[in-house]
Length: 402
Image 1 (tube, rainbow, N blue to C red):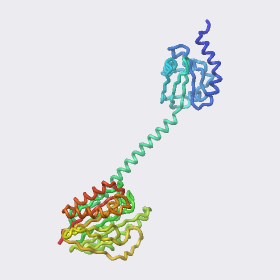
Image 2: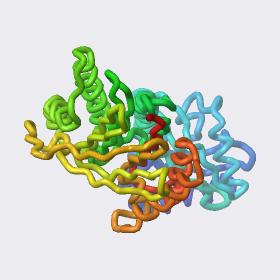
Image 3: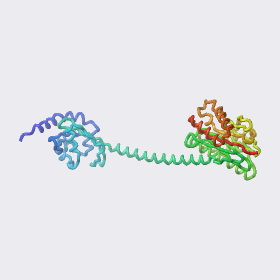
Image 4: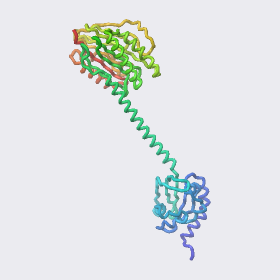
């Protein structure tokens, strides 16, 4: 029986193309096989006419053992695989196919291929094998590390949420402190802020404190909490002895307590702070350098401004203040305002009208008889509209004493 024209054509192709295939494909790292379909509609008639070294290595075969053989002869068990049908359909339809992840097992172990089938002409297709085992493993490692990172970030944010809750809980919520109607609020720019506000009564003396740690974030928040703890401890210890420190003595003691910790944090951070001690007759003693103190006078409707002088916390270990506490007096109905620079610099640090805007708004609200809570909310809402880049903290206190 003579060979059919189809077989003669295939044999000629094999003889004529092998040199070309060898030259082009032998140096590739990608596995390449070329299959010839001898009988249309018969995947078992696929004959291997080229298999480059990379493909032989991937498939665990020797070229001389599989070249020229039909697919089921060279690769026993392939009759149970969908691949012969896929190769044959690609040749007959002229449309390629991609199998992105195909597990395999051979003498080299287990792995994964990406297989692409490219029809060449009416009888042949080129099958490209890319070993993506390492890529799959790398992607799995990346996915595992991504999940680990997500868990770590979730835990970190959980801890940040806890730090924020602790800090906001430390802001006093009392609306009456001693002979004062009081409102105060802190709005951190970061998750945890560095502003400090406090108001409390001890041994018949009312204390107000306002401070600002350089920078913001976790380290600033830690410093703020340390300072509040030190302030309450110093005042509380003396109150048990029926004594009360002067504002400058309080700040000296607090500075001595926290200076070492500020150095350990290692960021050269410091805190501007003002401490105000109010006597029962309305006399206010204050020390420590921070923002000016604003006082709306109920009798005249004017707003007085008192500059602050004294030390910053954390700059030197043993401060010799050298500045006597300054003083002013409050009358019934007078309203005092303390604030951080996030209030006056909401439009940027070069804005020299921030204090003027704050003073004008404060005067308007206080003259209208607004409560301390209403004044606090109105000022902070106005500042928030300017999208401040810093923590914003405000304390408003109306003296209701004799």
